[in-house]
Amino acid sequence: MVVIIVCVGLYLFLGQLVATVRVQAFVGSSAVKLDDDQSNKYLSTIDGYFSRRINERFRPNLNAGDMTDYLQLAHPEIESLDVELTGGFGEAQVELKMRRPVARWIVNGETKFVNQDGVVFDKNFYTNPKVTIVDKNATKLSGGLVASNRFLSFVGRIVGDLQAEGLTVTKAIIPTLTTRQLEVHIKGVKPYFKLTVDRLAGEQSEDIVRIVRYFKKHGTNPSYVDVRVQGKAFYT
Image 1 (cartoon, one colour):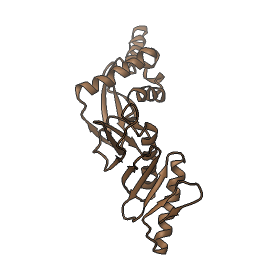
Image 2 (cartoon, one colour):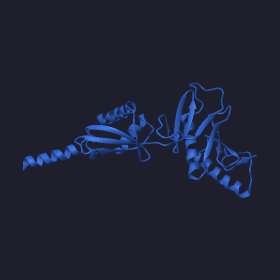
Image 3 (cartoon, helix red, strand yellow):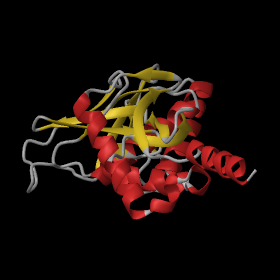
Image 4 (cartoon, one colour):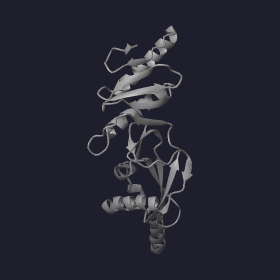
């Protein structure tokens, strides 16, 4: 009886043990194939997490939230993850859900993406978004970049907020000689909108939605609308 109990206990323990890991990425509900280099990068980061928290190799002890935060520091393209036991002794599969970008920015041969929550990342597993940030500045700041991650994050939140209201951003432009302003063009809407990163993205998105509805109701079609000042809208 003792031997049987020990064997059953060992079987149950090994069945919950995460000793070896494989990685699978998902875009939406569809699995995507990772190349060896990318897969090894994820596995290396996962091993780094488990080496710091050895007790979490026992599946019931795993803190998926902390593990997600750890992986996102090195791989911000990861939105969430889940660890599934495969049924084999000590084998598990880490399923990574990847972020969907809403805009991209290309400068000096470098491409950055941003999702609707304003998270900036370099690796994209989805089809490239249609919205591309156009930088009209001829002179770059030190380091060769005018738009910072904060700027790109701002664009992502604007695109996401307007998308949620049924408005599709077709173009985002950084005007000449500016580093804190943005011009946004919306599908089916004649005027473009002037925004600033010094004001909350959500507030400016709400203003744009109200203004679009107002102009549609009154049949007004200005060339542009400035929403950079809180509580006011200037147009011509």
